[in-house]
Figure (cartoon, rainbow, N blue to C red):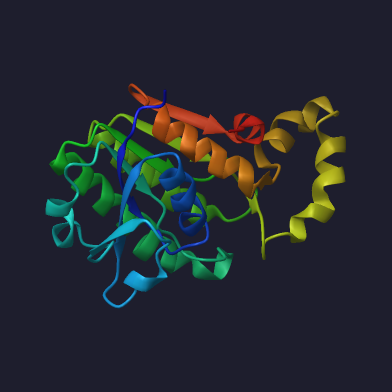
Amino acid sequence: MTRTHEVFLTGGTGYIGRRLIPRLVTRGHRVRALVRPGSESKLPPGTDPIVGDALDASSFADRVAPADTFVQLVGVAHPSPAKAALFRRVDLASARASAEAAARAGVGHFVYVSVARPAPVMKAYQAARAEAEEAIASRKLDATILRPWYVLGPGHRWPIVLLPFYAIAERIPILRESARRLRPVPLENVLAALVQAVESPAHGIRVVETPELRAARL
């Protein structure tokens, strides 16, 4: 039988969060999610809302306990090179705040969706997420870090046309590693990997790269 977890989650109204929460709830986990004032109704049913500012640990750190798992999903929607400043102001700042709050609350396991790297584009995005991973490690948190490059799902399907090119590149030795690392991952696989991370806590830092994400199933 799967152990029931107390989960504290940021980004619960976002693209991944609002789809992950119902999966966790239906599997018996209790989920509390951080939201801005007035956004409580945007959370999926079965979620306990916690009002606070994802960029300010002091606004919610004392509400994290008794969570044993912290899932950090806050990030800029539809990342693009034009949003370089936002990656530091939102993605990096929220990850630092979450890591601080989790450490202060004594959370046993931290789950973070980062990004695959190296990659030829989106350098600022990669840098912000890499610094976020360093912030998590500096807090001495046991953590699972997922590293998809692009998540395929509703409203995010245009890279499907590139999948045949990734398949070809994976057969070419000099391109194989990059193609496997940067191949888009279906949303359902990412959600499955997140559920698995919650239900199978890491000891130390566990990194889940694209090939493992693509294989994730519930």
